[in-house]
Length: 319
Ligand code: XMP
Image (cartoon, rainbow, N blue to C red; front, side, top):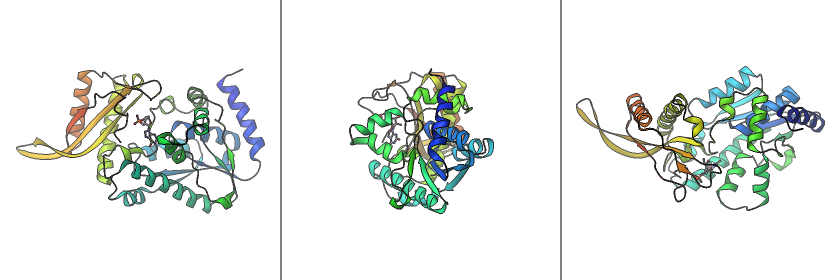
């Protein structure tokens, strides 16, 4: 019988049988899949699970603190937080090409994860949030963005000498099943039903060169947008919504003077499969309110625009 509770019981037993002695390592991203794996494994093997959370500086507003609060403080999961923002911004300096940025971000993640792993004793297992659609995807085409996504997300580059066995308790599950399990395991509904967030994070939502200053402005604008979507009950009616940083200066009036400040684009889409998407018909009063908040609260932004492009031909992300 398929119930979330049964699946959990079954997986806990399987993980316990599989793992035995030794540490299980998990890359915790803050996304749904790795979070559900963390909660499940914590329940199954407690302190034998060690998570590595890499704060890239390209995450959502205060996401690093939220992940630590939920998993480390609240649930008592062992989490190593690596504050790697400096490394990311340094590695990305001067790089404007989107695929080059993706590669740098992905490579750095693996590098940092490896470093942390090699500091730990007796690591014998690597846990991953692989879900059934990932299994199908990687059995098929090895080209294009999808592959880049998974090769980034599901750590592939651990040193050969570590010879880790894989623990993939979500391998047979679809996304909606993973979410139900997450709720059953006690993860907040809001977190489990969050919009997807790309592996490279704000790195592909800052057009062109990534800078710390841009990332901070973008994260703040994005947080205002998301907060208002929730308030106006539009969050669950959209499939994905976010802000994009446009590195162009547009004129505005601050006091009596003209000021040239940055532009933020808002994107919200409705989609079933993310292969095609419609832009969300958000109410004008809502957009007006978000725009005013962003411009009033973030000094360096003087203009907000709304993206009304469908996919195709426009992709959901701007890069
Ligand atoms: P596009 O922009 O191709 O996005 O219409 C479709 C979905 O994929 C996500 N996306 C990514 N996810 N790494 C990821 O993990 C990436 O490099 C990446 N690029 C796009 C995007 O957020 C949307 O949900």
